[in-house]
Length: 193
Image 1: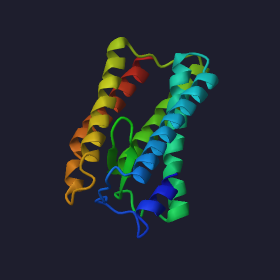
Image 2 (image 1 turned 90 degrees about the vertical axis):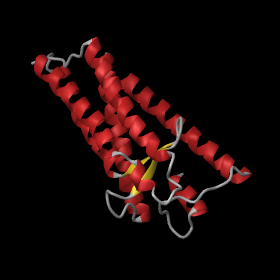
Image 3 (image 1 turned 180 degrees about the vertical axis):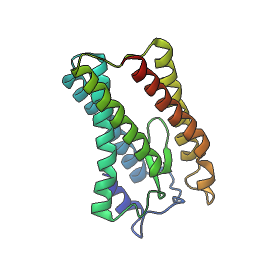
């Protein structure tokens, strides 16, 4: 779908800042189709995680795994099909639900790598009957870290059509959410040994 959208709206090549489109008939239908595709992908990921996992921990780990693999291979296949991104610092529209998310490609790849590491550790420890456990307070911290990263993507997403779009992705905000999640996971891992 992304390849088709880029060919339709950016026949000369996909570059930032993005062109502003009015909500015309074709653009509106295609945008709605893309949002529906994203929602369907999330349902598929949740369904796979639910079916693979035997408990909440495993389901969460499988969700992380499926989402991360999907996200990483999204960029792998864009590279194969379009020779894009040229670098990990190229910008992308990451998601459209509930609003546009944007950032350099490096940011979602870092998130996906962390998700894979977390998931593999959770699944391995579960298979050894030494589960990684998180308290309600720690889960609140994970939710907070996800919200901080989400906000960093959404702020940038509001400005993708402006010439100074790059100045709206705040790496320090992203880093706070990212580092908080890693620190919390390490804490949960160490206390569960």
